[in-house]
Structures are given as C-alpha cells and as structure tokens.
Length: 216
Image 1: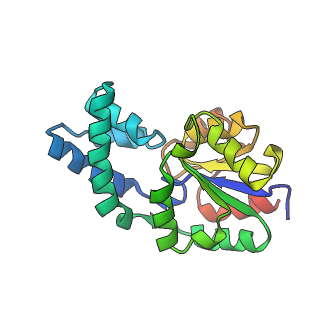
Image 2: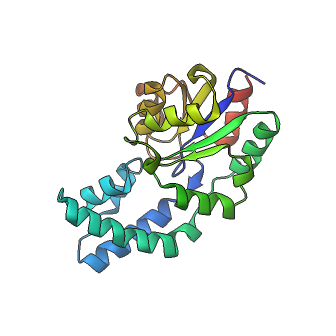
C-alpha cells in the first residue's frame, strides 16, 4: 500500500451522480412555493449546503423562509430524489479493490448522514466505508476543514496520509485546511484549472484513476 491510508470522498458529484435528482427536487420545490427556478444556480453551487443553495434560489436570507423551503425540499428529496441517485462508473469496483488492500474510506459531505446512508446502502457501498461525516456532524460545513478533521479523528489517520477527493473548490479548501492531500475530479462542479488553483494535486477524469494515486 502507498502512503495514502484514508480516502475522504465527497458524495454529490464525486461518487454519486445526483445532479438530475437535485435539479428535479429543487424544481418541484420552487413550483410548489411559486418561485422561479434557474437550474444554473444548482449547477454552479453543487458544493454548497442545502440551505445555502435554497437561499440563492429564493434570493432570501430570512432564516424562517429558508427553513420552510428547506423542509419542503427535503420532503421531496427523501420521497423521490434519493432513489434517482446512482454511482458514477467505476466507483464501487475501485473502492472495493482499494478496501481489500487495507485503504480506509470516509464520506465527507455537505449532505446529511441519513440521506447518504440510504443511498450507499441501496447501491452496495456501505460495507467498504469506515465512516460517514455529514454537515450535521460538525459545527462548520465545507469549505471549512471541520468535516475532514472529524474523519481523521474517527479513523485515527494522520492528515498527511489522507486524500480528500471532490468535484468542487469547497472539497479542495476543506482538505487543504485540514492538512490533507487533495484530488479533484473533472466530471463534476468545477473545472480542472479551478480545482488546481484551490489546492488539487491531481485531477482525474474517471474515478478508477484514483487507484493509481492512492497506491502510488
């Protein structure tokens, strides 16, 4: 095994192809609330928390409005959206191979643990995960380092032996803030140049390329 002992995986846009699900659920929420819906807001802010995205969609910073809209979105997301999510090609196979070689895996996400747990269980990924850290597990979500720090704590791995993998600058900033290595994926939210500018040491075009990075 190489020097990487822990892989910290972003969920949405990195291992989970959830874009269509989020667009569908956000669109339905806006329709129910009588709000206009601009899907480019989702496209440009997939790394944000649900509350942050809804604030941008609604144009409101009122906590009561955001809370009400978030609750409405979550009802739709849980009842319809979660079953729409699939893993990107090569994710399960790559994680299984690395797990069998002793590499630890944590999901580190601005999504919430129950939603992630439902999807990874349904798609057969759960047996290969050491922990799932969602936004509700820490004081500050991405891009602050709290989620990565908690994953390091739970797995007992040093920061210089861990790599944060994600599709957004939020993931790179989180990993860098925690002192970890960072690997971007080119098929998600932000482009390769932007990911490198925010700390990515590598940018991969398919998830299976991660295996060579981790094993050295």
